[in-house]
Image 1 (spheres, rainbow, N blue to C red):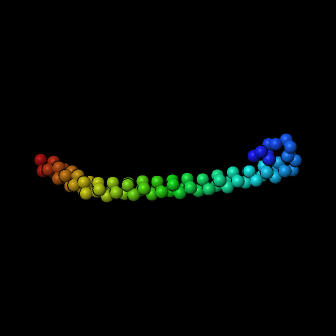
Image 2 (cartoon, helix red, strand yellow):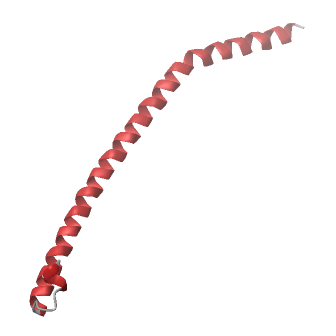
Image 3 (cartoon, rainbow, N blue to C red):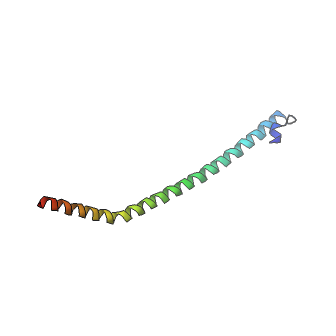
Length: 79
């Protein structure tokens, strides 16, 4: 960065080094963005799996609840 900010450096050299610094920064940002996107995708997949696991664990209970509800409704009709 000294070449960009030094008053001794020619203007054309400062422009050249400024462009290099900008390009390097953009490359770093692109890499970091890709890494963050991959991490977010992984977290989404983990959440999906956890949700599916929870739903699968709850399904038998839900069937039992429905059966209990049906029995209590049938008992109410007999009265």
